[in-house]
Length: 273
Image (cartoon, rainbow, N blue to C red; front, top):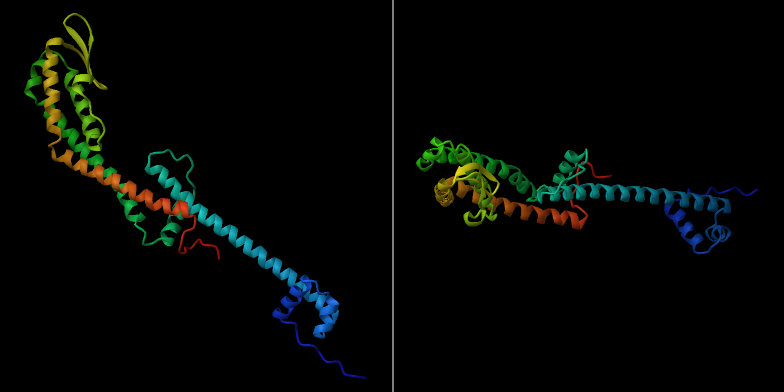
């Protein structure tokens, strides 16, 4: 009786070759005859190769989906930041935004985004501080204006607060390049009782004042509007708003690359394996 020769184990390469040949139309008996293997072995390994391929494809799909969602998380975060920069209300922030921001920073550690974000956060604080300093200076200056002393002594108590409100609004708007109030068009006199008018300048209400005082109030407003632009606080505010516009534009440009590219280079601790 002839001694049976044990076949060597079927390696992965041979198993994949059998699957390829089978899918190209070669039958298991034909493969077995050609390669000198038992047909049952060929069938078993073809089936095993199919299962291994399915597992590999499933893992690949899971990884691809995980990567797509990972990139989408960062792109969506960039989109929310962009909306915040242009003043849109962001209705839904992710509960994981802190982690997504950290992930994005690990992906793009050298991006100028981080310096721009820091400036975007600190410049408004600087602007608010300068505005507060200018408002305090304005209040003291207007209250000490001798031209208004007669009005105050005559009971026109709403004039000084109204002037301060109007000028304070211009301290906020003019450094931004927003159209300022115009004395010719925006100092509104509405008839009141005889000898009086209800006076307002833009949104600033000055109450009921004697008609004879309107000229003084107009002169005071015109004078202080002219002075404001020479204040150090005003010039600093102008520079801050110019810088803020520059930072917003540069930051939006960087975020657009992330949003539109849809793939973020680099790696982070949350990257799928």
